[in-house]
Each structure stands twice: as structure tokens, then as C-alpha cells.
Image 1 (tube, rainbow, N blue to C red):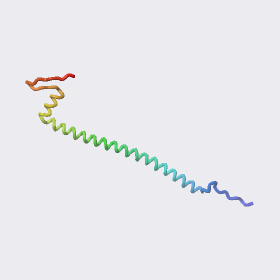
Image 2 (image 1 turned 90 degrees about the horizontal axis):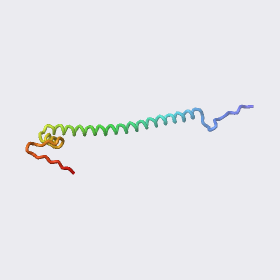
Image 3 (image 1 turned 180 degrees about the vertical axis):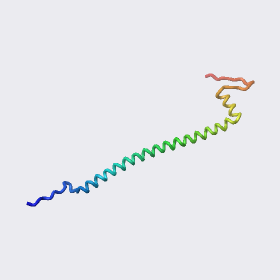
Image 4 (image 1 turned 45 degrees about the vertical axis):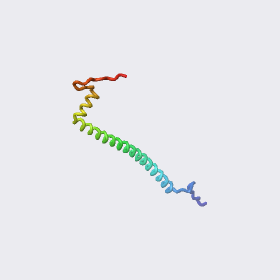
Length: 96
């Protein structure tokens, strides 16, 4: 009696199964790398925004530093922040 050859159930050879498993493995790797890339891009956008805010703040502070060299700005700060007045002036406080 001759031996009957057995074929794989679904008609897939071992090489085909290995190829399918390899493709699935690559898809999983690419997916995790893609998720990491998206996360890094979001982080880069947040950092770029923080840098832009910092640069605007530096500009504002430089302008304020240059104003501190003027007598009129120093007088304004003394009047507004410290409540100081010049000799001969009367101070009024408005109470609501």
C-alpha cells in the first residue's frame, strides 16, 4: 500500500506561514514606531510653543529693562506701585 501524502489543512506551506508571521511582526514594529513618532511630534510642538513663549517674554523683559533707564518710567512705577508723590502734591485714595 502506498503512503498517502498529507497536505497542510489550509493549503499553506511552512514557508508561507513563516512569511505571514514575519509580515505580522513587521506591522507590529511599524505600528509601535509610528505611535512613538506621533508622540515625539506632539512633544516637539509643545516645546516649540514653549520656546516661542520664552522668546516673547525675553523681548518684553528687554523692553522693560530699557524703560527702566528712563526717569519718567521710574516715576510712573513709584507712583503706581509704591504710592509715592512729589513734594507739594496731595494724594487721594478712592474707596469704593
